[in-house]
Length: 341
Image 1 (cartoon, rainbow, N blue to C red):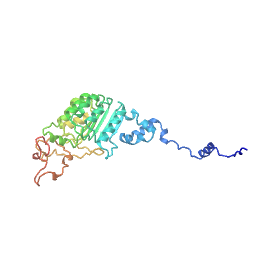
Image 2 (image 1 turned 90 degrees about the vertical axis):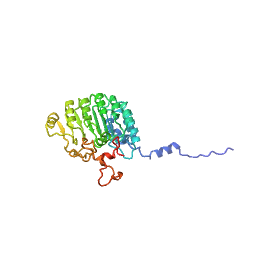
Image 3 (image 1 turned 90 degrees about the horizontal axis):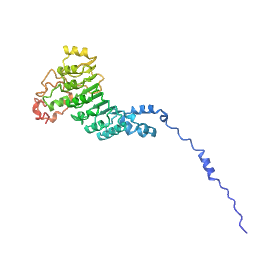
Image 4 (image 1 turned 135 degrees about the vertical axis):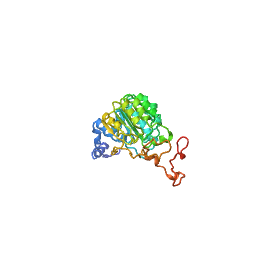
């Protein structure tokens, strides 16, 4: 006889799954910022600065990743306000190139601080023909002639601001010729005018002023903080830049505005800052020595270079072989090219 069949009751697997799934919590809602309008998200992210965006913010979520790749986000690039001291120049250089690439030729404004060289400047120039505003702060590796070499790539440039860096007469000439729409120019070379003097003991202190006067007739705003120009250079600027409305001459101690020239400046310029006006609120180091009343501290041939910065005297005296009667900055400690040895 056949064996009787055994009946085995089993719980269906799908019922088991169904019972467990019902106990799972619902998925968390999307982060609140994901629902923000795209333009508001872009505005918030832009305030972080290019470096923070490239290193961190773009990785937060897919929405931010997409926004951070929009060329509109990179029309204004700030490579300065959020720099971490631990980031090397080579990394900053690469981040800047990435930012410029993302602009896809739509870059209008860029600020670079404490890094950069001629190669980076050339890279930017070749990809940013729409640039309107260029600001360079303490870019020590950009050489004399670096700006002259790329000026023709910036035909729409309206504002150029150079702080704590070396710029030559040739640079100013080229910028003036190539950037006919330039309206605002800042040249703050405190800390460098003195070293330039040692390189060439007979440089013309009015070279920069004469280059501005001869090549930048459309200027409305000019700042020459800590410049060595004299009354001759100032007169040339007033004659050559007839549309000038704002002129900053603070710490330009070789200028005398007591007579007719001062009267002319006040009549011709709406917003005038004189050599000894307050520097309160100025964003950069503004301490500079006024040696215009004495030539005792200058090497021979440098008496015209009034206003050498206190940066010039940051040497350790132990580096020199001198006694109490030796001036370590006298001409005998300069080589034939004007450098200390």
